[in-house]
Image (cartoon, rainbow, N blue to C red; front, side, top):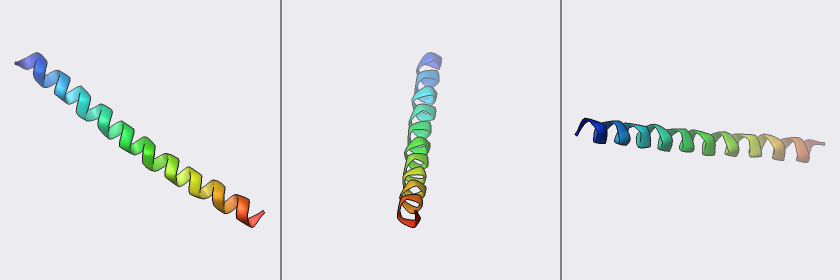
Length: 39
């Protein structure tokens, strides 16, 4: 049971990291877009 909790915790952290990366990619894409349009 304890191992199960550890695995679930790792999955939760993994999912959160993935969503954070998605947000970062979106922000970076927007920045790149603004740089491209202003250039």
